[in-house]
Amino acid sequence: MPEKTGKKQRIAAVICELNPLHFGHEALFRQARQNAEGLVCILSGNFVQRGEPAILDKWSRCRLGLLAGADLVLELPLPWACAGAERFAAGGVHLAAALGNVDFLAFGSEFPDAPLLKKIAEALLSPEFSQSLCALPDTGEPFARRREAVLAQLLGKEVLPLLRSPNAVLGVEYQKALLREKSHIAPLVFPRQGAGHDREGQEGEFFSAGQLRTMLRAGKEITGLVPHYTDALLQEQKAQGSCPLCPELLERSVLCKLRSMEQEDFAALPDLSEGLENRLFEASRRAKSLEELYALMKSKRYSHARIRRLVLSAFLGITGDLPALPPYLRVLGMNKTGEGILKAASPTLPVAVRSADFQRLGGNALRLFRLEAAADDLCGLSAPTPWPCGRDYTEKVIKL
Image (cartoon, rainbow, N blue to C red):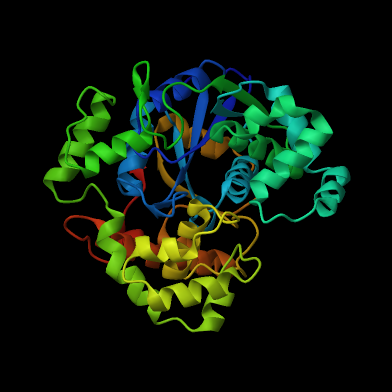
């Protein structure tokens, strides 16, 4: 850790899944560190935005984050980690702001134009947007398409390519969250490198996380396609039967849970609209596989990803009455610099390092931790060799 000189250490934060950590992540971390002396990684837990388990457990991905250059790793709790872009970004930005000493939020975008991303975010938060959206005729199109139409009216059609680029859309949501938080944190936007988020294929030297997951779950080698420490940890975990985590191994468990739920249980799920809970209830009674379930629920109004997340919420017990934002900062790992970042922080949320801290906090913090721990126990069934229950209570903070 650098010696104290009286000058405040600049801190950057990155909100990520590291699913798995690849050369694109490494490049983002390196670029962030060119602007800051410390790096905080806000990492999704064992379930991610796609509505499925990550390829590696969160403790392994925490270790990879530290090896790649992060100093402090905080967990993005379950209800935000496996949510849509708006809620995902709101949760991550809230944690970064709550630390109290973060100066920058670093992220990649297909359109690395911070002022334009902020302009779109401001438009989305404006009364004019809400009024125009309400006035738009309902043609059954997904919300994303209706949003595009209104923004094109307000800002011009030149914003449409950006609104159809996943990382740029996430960048807009980061900017919205920063505006809502009234945060001093400044965005650091870099050109996204490699194939697009969750897309097949390769651009230049980088494979996308989605392509790498497909290869790993098919039993293919990815040596040379990811940093050496990622490859080494994957090989170690595979030898132990701990990876790759595969959503297919949870299929019967998910269907069993859905078939045991009553109609009012589906009505308690988050992100519901227009009777979506009724469609899920009916589909769960008929489907013999998850793919059939998704097909039965298919509609141009609802994206496949939204349906997957809704099914995952039902399986894990995520309900719509949870807090709007994370109520704690949970430390997964750190190095010496990270310890210094934590000591210098002025947190506006309680910091939890051990499971006993949640018992002390009680309330929503304890409720969410128990939800997280139960979800992680179920996630263990997606490993080639299932892990035992209770890891959230027994795993220690990773220190490198």
